[in-house]
Image 1 (cartoon, helix red, strand yellow):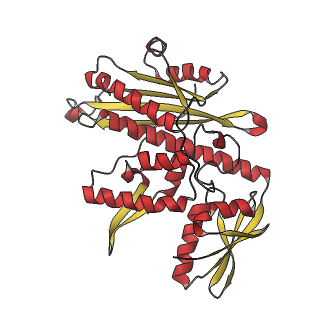
Image 2: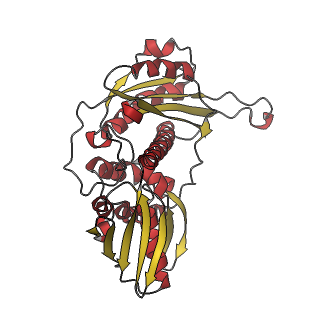
Image 3: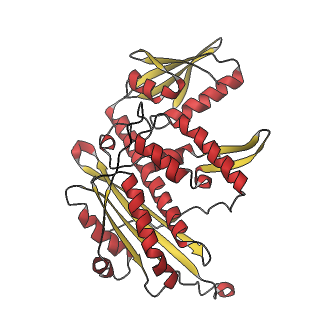
Length: 352
């Protein structure tokens, strides 16, 4: 299996005080509404996995007059919530992530499409071996929340690859040829070989996590397309193993989701598009215009770029090029009570 060099997961922000962490969680809870109406699995995933690692989805934060002001990573959120094995994610529409008009009833994970997983570590590394059971439970739980039925490769199948992550991934990709398999994931962790040049830290132990993840999604003319991500994370001796595994898997889901959404946008452009208008009233001043424009830009970004078209007292018309209908656009903007005006436009009243 060929691929480019592994990319490193971004370093985690240092442990922030508990009150700051709570402020970041609150900021993310408020940002959740700006993503549009979520499917039930997306809402659950947001509550369970996004809010449990708030620093990952906050680009930056600073003190403000009313508390913490957080810069939310909306792109990262959309990407993280993009892929699942539930039926509504199997078409090629741009719904993909966060554009359903209303949440669905909660679903208990059942036998969805198969996701084949391989875990590999060095049995001679005691901390690595001790973490194995917990890491496998975490992987199973995370994938089942996305609607997949998880199957692990046996230890004999993994051992035959002789420790090479790409060889393990090769075995996994054979599984994609079987009907009903939606993706594969290989996760390897072991003690990192110290750099012979860095003699000052030769006695310090580091551990390296590496993962390859491949999703199969609909492509042109019904031909499946592979969405592949590769990540790695180097940790210190005292860093918790399972939390580190969760970090690298989160980065893998974000990268895969980002590539999937880019695939959908490209399909949208190739399909042809028309200009839809968003007519907004109730804008009090220029600051109000800037705020609504920033909010709408974030919301419609999975579909395209927002452009200014017309200004008048207290109102503005924005344009968006998309192959979707005005009804679809109204659903995307449902948190702003948008309504279809005609086939080419929607209207909403700005209420800060």
